[in-house]
Length: 296
Image (cartoon, rainbow, N blue to C red; front, side, top):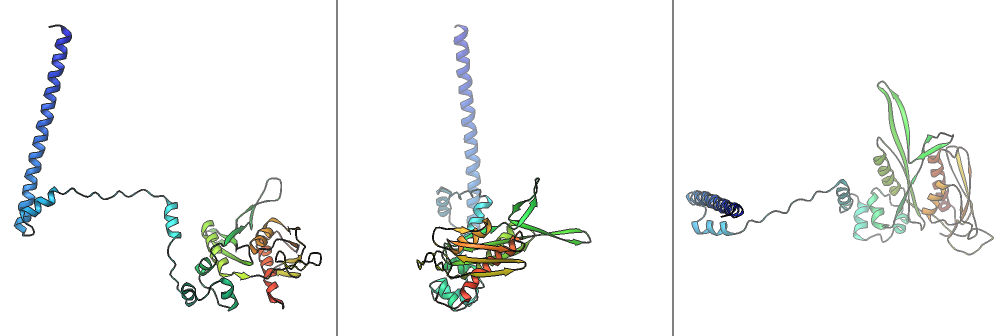
């Protein structure tokens, strides 16, 4: 025999021996498992729970594996929390859920006090929201870089205590508008609380065409001149013909768009850099449209 043949012969021998060892190990494992099952059967029979046949049948049945729990991130848990069913806590909430009020206009006409923001979500599902950038940090070349929350501080023995203010506006771009302000220690909670507050302060505004240049009798502008004042900020709104657009600043435009006003002239007086007062002054001006006499 040559060297190559001898090497091959030895390799085959080694493989056969390994296979024999594996088979022997399997046989030993089966014997041990059989002994364990017999012990279990004897235990269950001695306890008087089941017969030998029942135990053997159950052992033959394949074990059902429980599905492994998928790893889920924070966002998925938040989505689940958002889609929780609404359980009303007030009389008005129960009436809305039963279908007594078909629209938000019917509810506001009766002068009901809304204490649950879920009522607005149920009646106006297409409601949109916008953040008013009331905060600001000083920039390099002067001016301020606007932020969605305003930081305020108060002195304490241990040092300064900071809080964050947020202003949120909601609307459906069709005559419904609401504004809310809230304070918290964190950005997110302040914005969420302000959003809930804005839903509770929802009103129906009066729209029309009060411009003598247009006289189209549409609902693209406001019916007449209106004013609103909060703090030192005074806002005057004037009706315009179609096509003019909203002649106002960026934050003012946000509120008027959500209210459904497409064409209007806006004049502002006072310290308009305090955007919180400016936003509430615009809301006051829109609210005053409904306090005047005339058809809605």
